[in-house]
Amino acid sequence: MLNSSQILETIEMVEREHLDIRTVTMGISLLSCIRENAQKTAEAVYDRVMKKAEDLVSVTLALSREYGIPIVNKRVSVTPVSLITASFPEESAEVGLALDRAAKELGIDFLGGYSALVHKGTADYEAAFLKTIPAVLAETERICSSVNVGSTRSGINIDAVRMMGELIKETANLTADRGGIGCCKLVVFCNAVEDNPFMAGAFHGVGEADTVINVGVSGPGVVQHALAACPEADLTEAAEVIKRTAFKITRAGQLIAREAALRLGARFGIVDLSLAPTPMRGDSVAHILEELGLSVVGCHGTTAALALLNDAVKKGGVMASSRVGGLSGAFIPVSEDIGMIESAENGQITLEKLEAMTCVCSVGLDMIAIPGDTPAETIAAIIADEAAIGMVNNKTTAVRVIPVPGKGVGEEVRFGGLLGRAPILPVHGGDASKFIGRGGLIPAPIHSFKN
Image 1 (cartoon, rainbow, N blue to C red):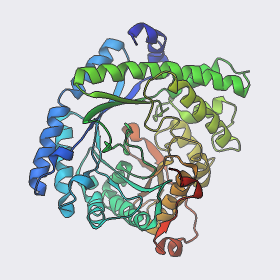
Image 2: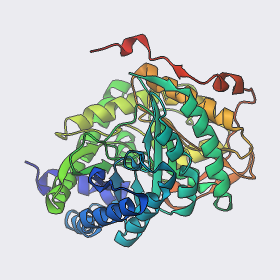
Image 3: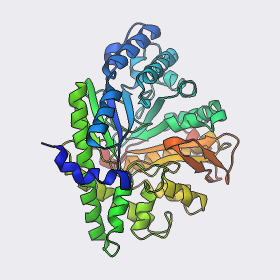
Image 4: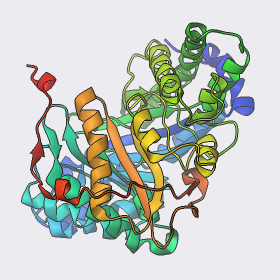
């Protein structure tokens, strides 16, 4: 059994090395909220979230005070909304607005689950639901949306991929006055997981318990500091250092998750042991890679260093918690990592190099700003490439790109807070519209045939 004495060493890392619990996320099933029309369903959804999550903020604040560990975000994830609005998909926005209202009143930072799962095909109600996403993201402050367009078992739904390219463009245009910020709340997945506590991709899977608590830990600064203490270590020894550090970080998450679940009357779900960076100096995954010996992130060797880091984080964390899940590993969101931001500003990292790095990181192309005039078909092709990496390698991959209206390469967009800032990266000038326009399904790989 865990107790506070087991994490005293970790607590000492809080002030010096930016250790934090990045999020406590409560997953809530909305399946019992389905009613005969949109208005009644929205009312039931609002009431359920208000009841289940009424103490989420106060409990997490109390835990933060008691254990001396900052808990940065209080979040909620819900059943994919497309499933509960199937009878009235064109009116799904009613539910989205109700969820945003509940999040505001409860003081929730973000609420995820305005989502759809279309990896093997798009039903009529799902196609209608998808069309509501841009307006909902433009009209709400805290709602996040995700769409799963592929999986290793099913292949890639190119018709859905094409549609998402168009919807990302529309979302950017509807939030043009804020730099296209709506796209920061929209992610396209392959192999989406049902217990992800991180936004914008969180949703509460239908196979989950009624109410669960998932915790996402962080601590890039802690890992960098540990590596700095052994500058002469070879890569095997460096991996061991990362493993031991990840173990300590994850123990803190395990304690917070169990206590939060107990106090909130929910089931303990998982600890996601991802290294999630921030724009703050000293809290960067990119700087960990440079601590391993790279002169700058993006140079040759970057993918290998990231592979070492990601694997060591998983190995260390999995021994520290009885339930490791979510995405778990190292995130590389460009706008949210000061090292990545500076490397991109200096032209040291490109979209193509980032794509290569996603083969070995936790997720995919994340928080990348691209020119506002990028065609929807090009965005769809970027999604297809990333989904292919996930499908073939049996891993979760994702795309969260922001075509910034009115801006081009060499300019910058600023979102503020954890969303940070990003230089506009160039995209390839070739045309993939005919490929994307073929539609259909990219078949699942041969190794998907398992039963």
